[in-house]
Length: 150
Image 1 (cartoon, rainbow, N blue to C red):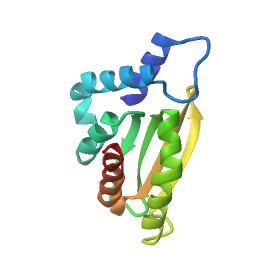
Image 2: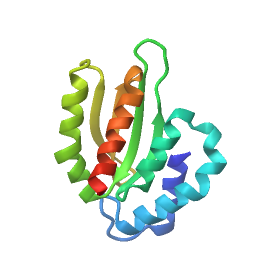
Image 3: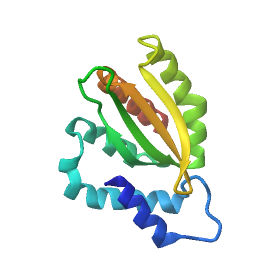
């Protein structure tokens, strides 16, 4: 669902010079579009992730595009992918990710994977976790983001 949102938006505002990060204008439009339409698509989301998606999409500089909590099958991983502004990217890489790595890698070497890639002309963050750490991870991640806004 979220990929469709981004593709539609990208076609609507295509410009000659586009940053690889979300601009404030893109962030505002995508966030508005997400909240205007996600209620229609809510049954497609893992219900446990919905409150976290709401927090992430309300955070300036973050717009989610894919997510899954993970499932109880052996070695199944949850994940979230999201587009970011340049300021948010730097904040996550310098402040949040080192903290998350230290906290979760002590639990298990496969507890958490952090990375980024370049798709559809934008940098997006990819975070994956062992399904049993979903709630712990998302609680800590969203708490740190909310704390940073204060």
